[in-house]
Image 1: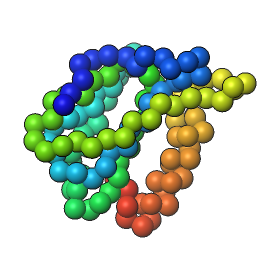
Image 2: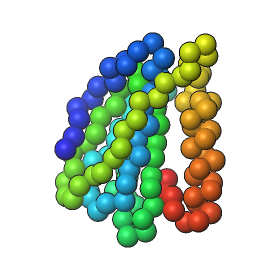
Image 3: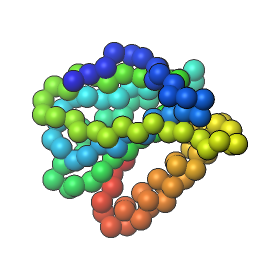
Length: 119
């Protein structure tokens, strides 16, 4: 499947972003393209060898236009999570400063040391 360029529908006043976790499954295409005022980033989860059983992830602000290009072969298996900041806290100025991102970085470090994660 694919999604044309869009921004996420806010899921409340504390919703600030999206976390995508791509499970290891053979596919071609299906790149995620995220645009911001400064740049465009393309995430190609298909470049990972699914036999390695590595999990890939990315996070981005929900108000950034993004699209999923068509999957050309196989199936792209992705878990999508809405990211919210806690009541009484402000939205992180950069996604990299959010507590969930820092937690994922720590998890990545732990899993990478065991050869389980690829980015």
